[in-house]
View 1 (cartoon, rainbow, N blue to C red):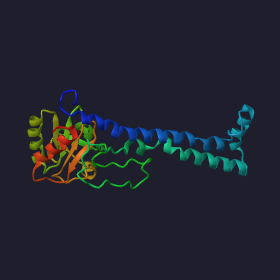
View 2 (cartoon, rainbow, N blue to C red):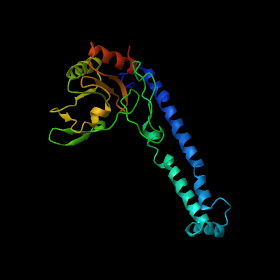
View 3 (spheres, rainbow, N blue to C red):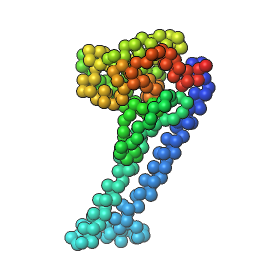
View 4 (cartoon, one colour):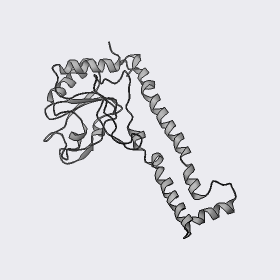
Length: 245
């Protein structure tokens, strides 16, 4: 968008501000996982040297019917279970909340993590977080993810049954700013329906509110309900994100 003249150069600075902390988090977790492999080798009896004969004996010892073998089997189970932080750490991959000039929170309080933030993914529509996935159903019954409604190189506005005014404001602003902005109204008897109610639980806004989603599926702003100046609010936010004076 900078190259196309649709955004100011300060937008480029958001890349480092947002991605550097993520890179640090992932590398830190990876290095920590390497260190956490030790207990497995200890439990298998493979920590005492490189003698292949002795290593094989230590491995086979776990099959014995002795108290020591039972203790070894328990240690192996615990060591493997602890490796969930390496193999099942969904939080490290998905709980990445960006902070930069390309995110507008309007002072909203960031939700806390109720579970281990490294291990468990906690979906939220708080600005800076990745858009949560929920299955929706198109007219005719075709299933589609909320993620599929967004991206594709453009901004997207998602609203509920009482948010038709956001759709109109989005279309008008897209023409005014000369950028591509999609808008989707999600609700019963609409092109996209939330039959199971999963999206209603994840969106964290009312039926008249809206989420503004970046082309990279990052929520960048939200309004819980209709505001007094929809188009002006969207213009203010997009101008800030895109560094447009």
